[in-house]
Length: 307
Image 1 (cartoon, rainbow, N blue to C red):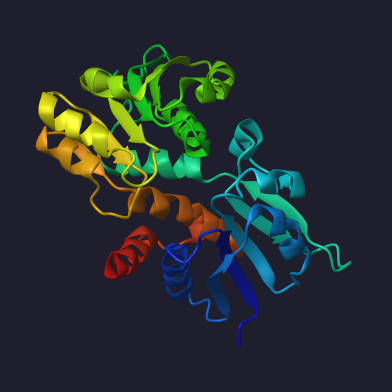
Image 2: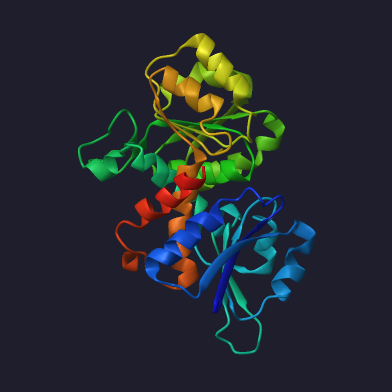
């Protein structure tokens, strides 16, 4: 009997792999009365959907176009949902006993991006304790951040990517946008994070790629294909770590081009995995320390079986 429900919301939503990840975690935890599904909900319908839920509902994942819409329907409960005004996680608290849930909002996307790059081998000096590594990270002897990152795109995911660069110890970011004017909101965020931000045309990204320790594409599927073609034509050297948040197609053209130039490249399934792990803890009420040490392996294996 299912007594606890969770789901990912968005539109479109049929492609979402979140149920695969979360249900694999529930099996590993022995939570046989938990189920995680997907529901197609657009922005205008979000409030009525939330009002329709009962106390069996424990948590929700939010994807496009709901990550901003949900902010006015709940309360920020962590640093990144507060700073970014973007949440991908809602935890439903029914403890008041009045039939209405308090909605606590979190952003685990930032952690997902940073952790995916760390697992790929990017090491900040703060973690190594040996000073700046590979020209990037926080200098353990001075506490100062250093190094440059590159971000492709300027939407909501770019906000999380910019915050992830702060977690990774970057001091400056070059952001490449299809529409520079629409990227203006990111300047304010960079100032809040005490980071230097340059906004440049997307067509110039390849020229700057070799100088960046970390690069993150937040563009939709195939939107970075032109970048990939330019990368192949220029054949740059000394590329850093690259994360493409897209996981369909897999690998993307940008990932293949990056690897052909000798750089490390990972897909969006790794970000999806590492943002889902803290979501599982938040929604089930468990501490992350209480999760099995190999929960990431278990969830990734389930994900790879369907990719």
